[in-house]
Length: 86
Image (cartoon, rainbow, N blue to C red; front, side, top):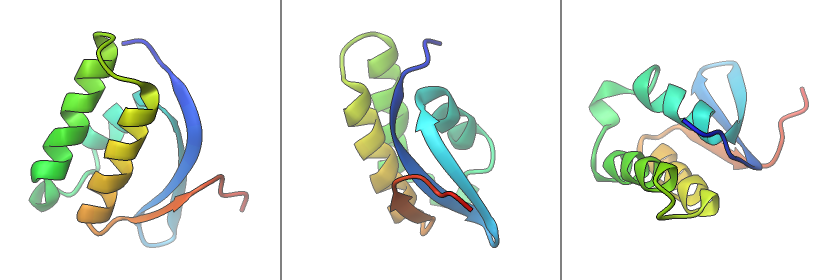
């Protein structure tokens, strides 16, 4: 998988655990790892599709980032655009 970087998105997957997401590989790791199983609905499927489309050159990294933010918000994952410096 090619890794493409984008402007940081900070997420909180667990209480007290903030993480900066800055590339497509990190998104894929979250989607296949700690993403809440009960929160894998339509927005989750959309970000998975966006990742696959991006890998095949059919969509931009910015589209993947936007889909990721939408899916995280839908899953009630705290999201803030920009770097966490703490």
